[in-house]
Length: 81
Image 1: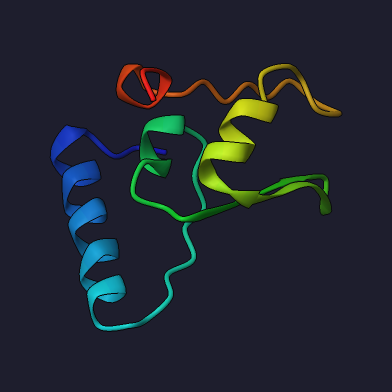
Image 2: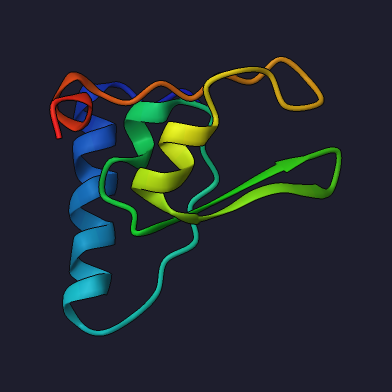
């Protein structure tokens, strides 16, 4: 949660590197901007799965609070899709 823009860029590059090698990365994030390079998103609240699926589907569904205050808003680029 304390990543600056450079840190987020480094994280995105690291995730892409893992994916390029056929691997899987698990990312824990609180900010929607950290989710841009992901394929699947799992939303958990108090240890319970609230939503799981393709990023575009979850980013569309999770637009209001789920159990606790949580709002995932797509980036302007994703919203244009």
